[in-house]
Length: 239
Image 1 (cartoon, one colour):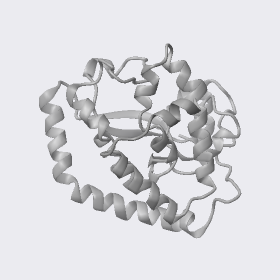
Image 2 (cartoon, helix red, strand yellow; image 1 turned 90 degrees about the horizontal axis):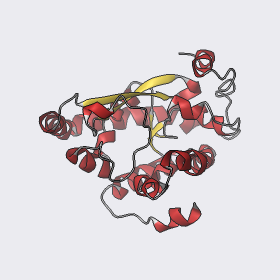
Image 3 (cartoon, one colour; image 1 turned 180 degrees about the horizontal axis):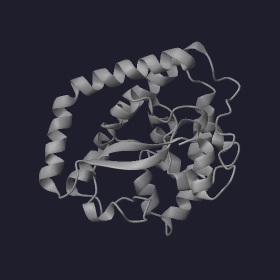
Image 4 (cartoon, rainbow, N blue to C red; image 1 turned 135 degrees about the vertical axis):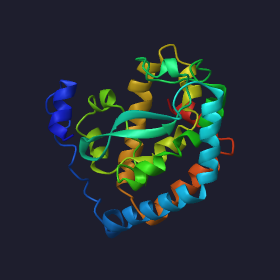
């Protein structure tokens, strides 16, 4: 779906009209050619090597709660084009069609197995298929819901000039986002006014340093942070 159509669906004509503009430093050889090659190679290898784990998790999801194995949701990708992000389902089936978009720590909609999947980011593994399809990258600004993207400022929309990623600098900084939101009286409002703007600022900074070395560092930090305790107080102070 092209950008103008997404604008009309959101009732905000022109809100994504300049989503395809590129920041000045984006466009090096790695960003234009190497990044996609690396994505395809690592995502394909990852799906093959992790296939036993993926099959095991799929069986566990199916056996422990009613509903589909996968959760699909429309997100906004490169140049404002919507796509369906793929995840392992971590919530009870009845909650998937609700209007609640924010998940906080202790959310009763999350299944027992879902808490484990979310804790170690295993629910994100099916997005390797999104990477192979060219809808996502291994590293890049996390794709948001259309309702949030429709409220981006012109400066913030610059993050739509690249493929969204499975991980990014903001994901590392907000490793404990659900716990932070659980402390707020209005998690949805706090996300819109505090967390999301900071995430977008971090990702705009990432666009100025898209390199093989930086992407490799982010991937390795993401893997390690999934199994090691991370510091939460720094983010709380910043907010």
